[in-house]
Amino acid sequence: DTGVSQNPRHKITKRGQNVTFRCDPISEHNRLYWYRQTLGQGPEFLTYFQNEAQLEKSRLLSDRFSAERPKGSFSTLEIQRTEQGDSAMYLCASSSGATSTDTQYFGPGTRLTVL
Amino acid sequence: QKEVEQNSGPLSVPEGAIASLNCTYSDRGSQSFFWYRQYSGKSPELIMFIYSNGDKEDGRFTAQLNKASQYVSLLIRDSQPSDSATYLCAVTSNSGYALNFGKGTSLLVTP
Picture 1 (cartoon, each protein chain N blue to C red):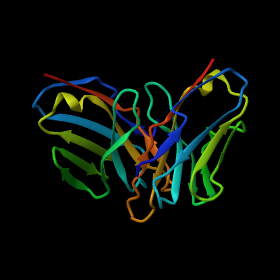
Picture 2 (cartoon, rainbow over the protein chains, first blue to last red):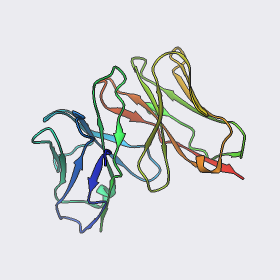
Picture 3 (cartoon, rainbow over the protein chains, first blue to last red):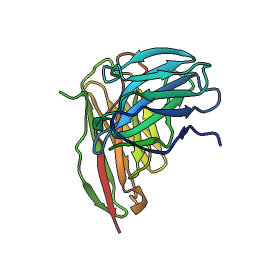
Picture 4 (cartoon, chains in turn red, blue):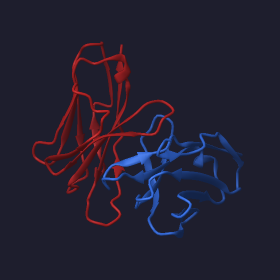
């Protein structure tokens, strides 16, 4: 499989719990992005990594959110003390950064439901 | 003003017709423009990108860019029922890395 993969695909949790999502980018893609999408909206940018360095974070990424990409390969997104407003589809994308028009390819997403 | 604007639709076209999807953006410094297709419950799938003024064709799809008017469009020729989906317009942000998306236009192709 050469596409972006995400796990788990679905997560149901209770308010106040912590959750962690994983993203495996396309092999040799050095750029990795996290987005969040709610019903009826387009994806909203959360954060971006180039290799292991987190280079950009959106104002949407509150203190309860943290993302890592420790070895420049897979990435994790953790949400602490989840709130009902965190319910959304969390999308990961990767790109090669090799061309002037850098194209992002999305994974299948992790759908989070906070009860 | 939202950075990327799209008419949410739904846009309904008969099978075989041309579907025209439009997008405007606010940041004159944006360099690259993308169209993604998203089926219900699925993730966005890249259709095509454009970064120069004018038209770019790929099969049944044509993207059009007018930077002076800050306008991007997507034409789908010979529309098929399988084209029924939400079409997302995305524009590179100031940083050049993140994408700013519109809300998407829902397209329904009726047999």
